[in-house]
Image (tube, rainbow, N blue to C red; front, side, top):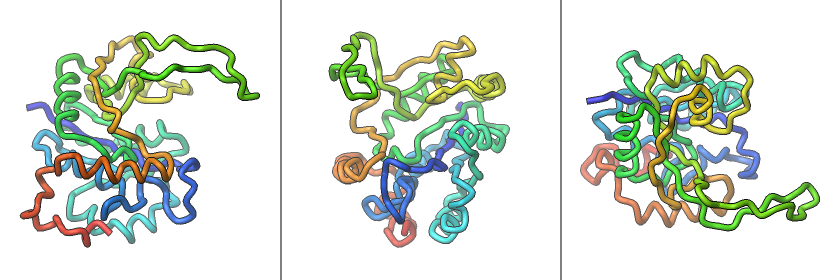
Length: 246
């Protein structure tokens, strides 16, 4: 069985979320923090040997106060993040256990994840070395200038919207990061694509949404009710109660 390490980047500034008290990965959602919903989908898997959450240095004291017991009980590694997202992922890569064959990167603020989607992207990565979840672009796309006037309509044929998880053979991802330099990629797949490796696309779902605004948070509450519960946190599990997550 291939072994996976999972990196959950949560060190961003959350500027679009516009909350005076919470960054989006740490805001309560259905009884526990958003990032814990994301983490729990991987904690129950036998093929996952490590879960790492990456946080900003400025958040460390508050994070330890609120989630220190969760981290200790669940065996999650906390990694100090960098200035940019890719600095944070690189810091986590350096902490990945040597027995991990693959590295999975999943947005900490993307909590509405189904086990079947993880299965699919993990299996695809095992076959090709690199795979991501994505969905076909369904709406008409417009390129808009700074004056908010339409410059052109962009054909959506063969266009897909990238999601996470994004999963890569460990050495492949480490090589890609070593060669990244200052390249301004917007996701990890682009870093791997840049060194010439083909990345497989696995169909995801529109409900695998990333929380960026308060409206997204309200939508996620409804989505979570429709998703199957992770096996680890069923009613009989000793940590199934809400108190541990607050």
